[in-house]
Length: 143
Image 1 (cartoon, rainbow, N blue to C red):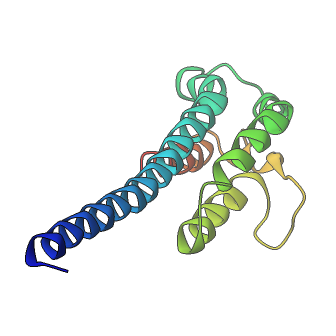
Image 2: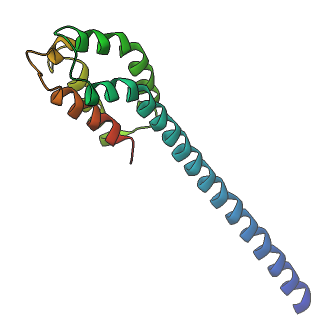
């Protein structure tokens, strides 16, 4: 084999190697972008799921003793579906932190069952507890 043939083979091998590295790198970048896009979409859906109740809590002063808990309880299935979709995009410490925020919103710390009575007018007269907990959930989606 002469020097020219050797250089041609070396050049061809380098081209193949460069293409393989480019393909693998592009694959991992595409996977990362897809995951980020899925998390962004799930975050938008989560924010949208809480928007009507969040607005009512911020703007209405005419709710009675049971209206807030009933409103949040009625919206729970919609919120839970959006939360489940969003949690699917989280891992590790992010998942643990979000799960803690979610549980603070919908139940007592030591229980699994929803307890929306914590947001009644006697316990949360200006709705600030409910507003802050929903804000924490919505803020988490901005990451």
